Image 1 (cartoon, rainbow, N blue to C red):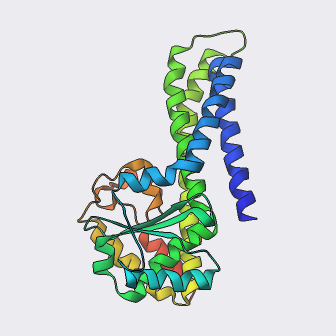
Image 2 (cartoon, rainbow, N blue to C red):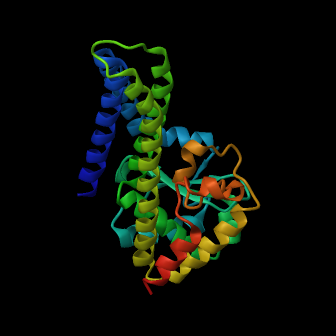
Length: 275
């Protein structure tokens, strides 16, 4: 069912992109948008995980090089009935983590050096459980495709400025309005999907470990330390993948309205209700 929901959302976003291409440039725009969407979805499905791991200079580890982390993940995957994901460690002081991969057999979990040095064993277990819950529900593929299409819609809106009117296109005023509205709508879709999935992954982690308080404690520490540190080469396009927004320390009040993560306080309160 979760896999079906993932592909249904991918299809819906692709159709939205193609429709918008048609509104901007008529039949030609639809054809260009279809070709672009096909290429983007192919890349996002097969290569986005490798690209993001490379971007953050993630180093692969195994049972011999990171025995403690490996044992935690191995125990949780048995509990969650998941294959063992590939494990990576990201250099950097900010405690954080993310999962990536298109399916169970091609999944990876990456944690920062800061997370391993700051958190207790129980808190690390809770964070890993959160990431495995994302894998369990195909959240990472959804997040990647949503971000890709949202960015493409914004790019298409900019290109729309170069198209004039035509008999197979709507009124120029409607076109201009759509060029402002559609990128915002796509961003809102990306935010809603990401925020809801974070709450779901938190609940999944609490169920997997049987201890919601472990994740509550971990989230409090992660949020606090994220305000004073940064992840090298962090970028907004991949911020939604992390358990805590890596730009937490830079968020202003207006930017928080457009954050891909719910507030840490909200997440802790929801976990409290699960006890």
